Image 1 (cartoon, one colour):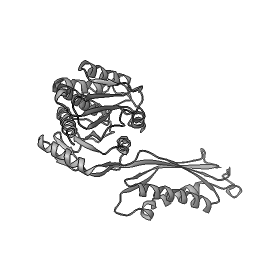
Image 2: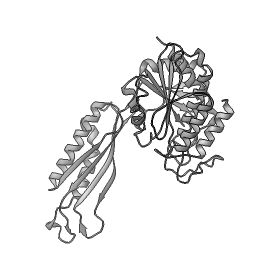
Image 3: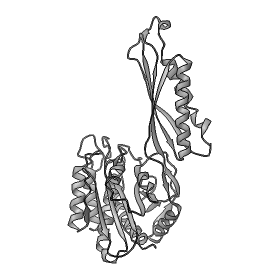
Image 4: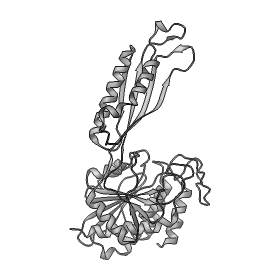
Length: 374
């Protein structure tokens, strides 16, 4: 596959996006292209997404290259000639770019398979946006022997030709909390005959704004955000209960544990102060993505040797289930500059196709080089 055909493949994926768990056409197109090139597709039992393999003819390391393939429930407003044809669904995070780049790398590696040391495991992962796709892939057992993992992600702040490579934490752990405060409902004209959960919910919402400052080192990034506050359904009734929901983003496990305890304690204290009770629920997401410094240095050297500009990229508290793979082996999550005026998840997000072929070449070179490592 050459640059022109790969770009056409990318535009086709962009025009036909599919949300998490429904990536049937996308999977079919990837399977068709891989099989046409003679790339081995491994039996996985996955409903969507697939795992393929190149190499294994010469001794070497097992290198994992992973992409995500799902889209978002976003109405596209990009104005592209190849904009989404599926109403209300859009590749607003560049997963079409990721899948195409990995496909290009797979086909380049296949062309050089006889000279390839080691094995390259190619993971086309479904359902990253829902946060459970990585676990589904890992459950197949097909990544158990991978010794190093790598992934690319579109990055609008950088132009095509620039890669962002940064050691240490690069994406946050995304946890959710749900707090149900229960009082005693009554008529709004007789509040003394009930126990309103509203003041307790309001007090707790304010208290959570200072949660990070009380338990997290000021030099350690952490975020607590209340995103949903609800109570009652009419103007003259004191409600029985109130609901507070939000997200916690941390880069260190110690901060994650400390904030969970702090929020639970605050919920109990605020509810009790107003004569209410609180039920606290914590919904754990993936861990923070932490890049291995040694592998970062190797990836940076390869990128520079290929003529890429390399930057560290800005820190972010967004999340990625790529961290699930890093529980079994080290890896690097790399940002690939794709230009564009709008950020990921925006209806007008775009990824410059000019960045696609170089990204595919970089992934292939990275896998080739690391496979030769002793």
